[in-house]
Length: 211
Image 1 (cartoon, rainbow, N blue to C red):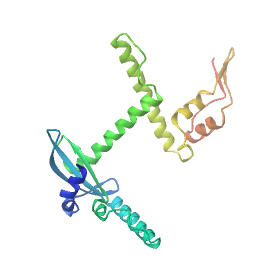
Image 2: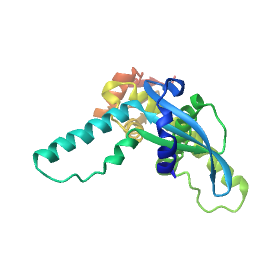
Image 3: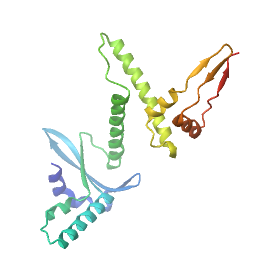
Image 4: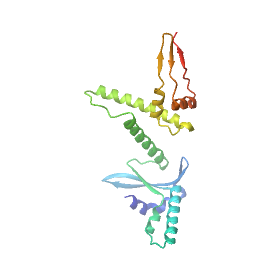
């Protein structure tokens, strides 16, 4: 379907009336009505300007390389007419300026659920009532929010940007405390814990007086 839509409407997309910006991307997008499995839908045919130029450059560099090797062309010429194109389909009739923000919001939600499933064990164990299930779900989402927040904080720091949130929490968890009669004495932080403490300017006292 995407190829038919591009072939049928692609020539009309790249016009000033269809131009829009999303973050730093320049796009052209046109909405057309389509029928999908008996349902009325809307197809949003778009061209990413940077992707278009990148694919054109790749195509012609490959053509030059093949010509130098005296090889036959392996890519059909008609494929050039689809450079930079993509198609999104929705049951909702939207303004073209709304499409990309909604698409990336959906992608963010899917990534968050994936994060919850893989890192927080979102899928619940066997349970016998709704209360247990809801409790597990609530705690899992709270843990997901915490991990996503930690991940964003780490990403904002150059020296911590490549450190996974789970590894950061495990490093900090290794800081133990020994309780005496009057004070709590913390253990020496490890290498990664020290880096986190320094970069995030955390206060981790060596001794905490209890009285």
